[in-house]
Length: 232
Length: 264
Figure 1 (cartoon, rainbow over the protein chains, first blue to last red):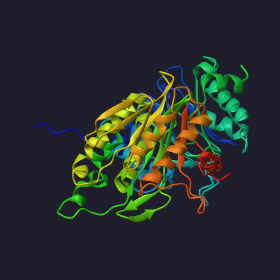
Figure 2: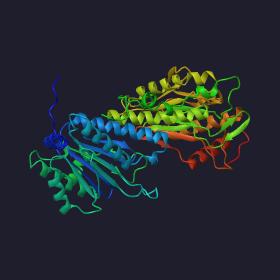
Figure 3: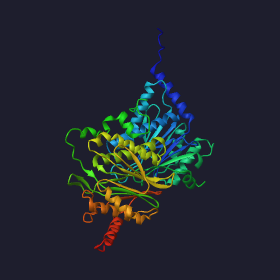
Figure 4: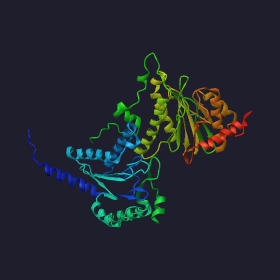
């Protein structure tokens, strides 16, 4: 029987993390912004496979990295939310609990499995003015190793996350109207793409968690609406 | 991935059955034995086509034997933006079925990224009714109507069901529940193709008034308490509920037109 080589846990973790970061860096970035109308989730996406999805009445999801992996996480989120809403009430389904569940699951994969997940996700929740104590928006970012953080105003995930975060720190203002938030997000994504390709209504996926809607607040902004708002 | 879900499909009821058994409503268990449970029953619901789509309406009374269980129970539910379920039978399981149906459609839409076709929705409901058969054998019968606007065929459509999950598409109108027979008799006298919204509303309200007149378990219009039937219009612009004031106005017109009626 051959003895396995000893590899220090530190080295294993570093190599796994490098592997995951490289995988994520290959894909495009995704931006989430709070705006006057609610919370806006955006991604540069020329394909018909969505990177942004509806989780529940007030909760949206965005993922970057390997499609099959973050889409699986999205579906897990929908199942988690629907079962919770059925067992308790629709108002009991909150982004924080879901982000924590993601954090546990992704952290678990990172430590136990040989291959870490090559994804980062955002869980965003829009506030509801009719529910006392639930008025605030919430944005959570969960990384490949399960590390979780909450963000105010905006959040970027993907390969260019650090650069775009610095850009948005300078540019972002609270209470931007939807049109301006959308244009700012587009400019940010354009920077990540280094000008190529041009980010416009054709290759932009944008979804809004709209504060004033009743019930399901998540909806997709169609190419026509984007064209109108972006003025191109 | 270490996530508590074995089930990988797009159906919420199957997800419950696979991974969350304790949440599945097992009604047959409660209705076993000699003595049948006395549970509130919902009574008359109806659906009829009009020019823009389909109208679904239901009275508000739930009865327990000869007693009133609730005067303002809801029997007509929007299951999504373009479809409506109307329930008759044992109120508890029927309301739960309407709730599950709504979650089922939303769950599918979120997982798959697009909504089911109207036929697919009706088929799903038929499976849910079939799953309730053991409870139905014990007396907890649920027989809903399902209606909606079919955006592919650009028309309103409606279905009735039997306890075995049998699904029957109706061409013009249908009513079910204890007063369903009277409601149907009432509708058939005046229903025709291409009805206007106003005319359709009047036929629906009149049918419920007629059903309440003949069937003691159907609630009429309770002007004193301000309890009106629920009437939903389902068309290309989605599901819209008629305002109580509108129903009251129609009701007064109906009374005025009857022999010995009073001007409202």
